[in-house]
Image (tube, rainbow, N blue to C red):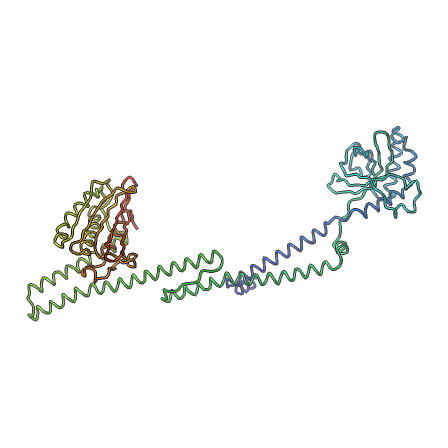
Length: 508
């Protein structure tokens, strides 16, 4: 048994084969249930009542007791003795005819006698009774007197739940009621053979042909459906293998059922994210190597020049010092960024008035702006306090305002404003500088990414805005940038939640 199960599992190890097999199994079960139901329905199908009525009418007309009852009509209910005699006579009729004999009041359907003793005397049968014209072919051969007897027919449900058919002969009639002698049989059920004979011998072949055609169509549909589900998943699986091999540009068509389409869309998003992260990593390595190589080359070159005695030692020492300081800043920024991204940078959280902090940073950088000939103004009234690290938030403002000074030409202006907005505090830094191209906006906060260096300073590390974003997000806030294009300036906006918004420092 285990070997057969293992073999079956190996044969249907692929999704398409399993889907196809499951559809076939479902089809087989469905056809089996339909076949069983069909047989059960045919086996329980009730036969038409007319043949039974005709047979019972013939039994009724053949009973000699009808003449006795007809002649004794005035005296049947006259006394107990005569009624007992009638009861014995009815018992003999039931034995001779092999049918159930009942004496019933046609008006209220009350029972006077039941040879099967299923109903008690006086009990109502609640059946269906109608006048019955006995067919001429059955009347033929009987006396004219029998031909004039009033007949009824109908059906009732026995106490055991089975339906009985009956034909009755009026036995006693008075001014107020009509009594009838009923001859009853259970309503017969048709056999499959009788049904086939009734509907014709071609029924079974037609059903077989229909089942065969349905099976063929179902097999074809199962193949199409299983292929429609399996092929897109196979495409996704192949694409995953390609991504694992380093082809990060791999994409798959979005097709198939909704669930398969969702898988394809999720894969495409994942692939795009992986490709973007891979590009960021490559840019990061290239920028780090370049930005480290440039100051190291200067340090090495001027050190060699000092050794060769071809430069002024004091000037060379100053350059070496500046380049070493630049390297130190880069290492510190890289360390801070790594700690921020890992959520391991400690922060001293206190209540900070961003209006006061912004004014202090602007005052500190005002000298730098005046030396470059750039107007730096601030509109920073007292703000609702925010929960944060004052040094880190000052680092954010310093970076944004310094960038604005660096990228704004002489004669330009920078405006710094603070607002109470959206349950928090918003700080905006707007300049009239070189602006940012629309294509560069989505990448402006990436590590080492810098705008076109021909339009800005050449000494930046490209880490400042990435650090700004990490610090702001660590405070539960957000930072955004807007620019109408090159030469039209830019606006950086920082929003931080206030303590009323249950500010917490986010640890990632």
